[in-house]
Length: 198
Image 1 (cartoon, rainbow, N blue to C red):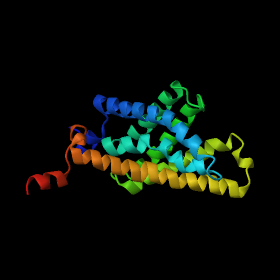
Image 2: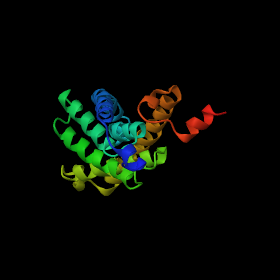
Image 3: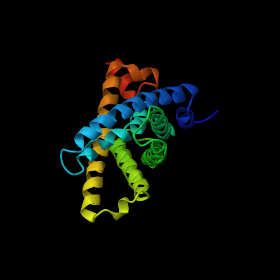
Image 4: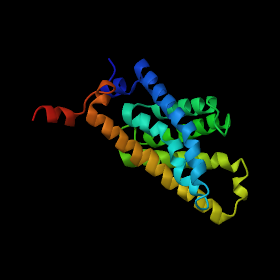
């Protein structure tokens, strides 16, 4: 018989299905979000970066809901694939970004042994996604930008990453938990049992 930790961390078919569905929802949102990004860009130099964090949100959100290894990467990849299919402005490059950003975010949860599910950890996952996107960007000539432009661009992206992937994703999951929706996805916690016994 497997230890409880191993059983609880093993992905079931329903986990994969829910993760992909979360990715599908975010894939639609990602495509629509391109308009928000475009509207923000003219406000001031690199203003669009303040909206960029939305594209890092799928993985951390899915992980906070399901809390199992691989979920963050799978949701990010699913969202990127659908976004590309729907005609993302970045075409097939969207899938490359989704893959790298998903792996980077997954690393944040892996380093905690998949035992931490806080807004801060989700925010760090978002920041690592931003770092992943920066690495890809270097291959498209961004390294030739002036230093102050790079600092402004990626500084704003990191802030946005923490807000969307950490704060917004965390608050949204907490709202879902309050409705009881997540109880059908993962077992109730000790705190939940404590409330029932009061």
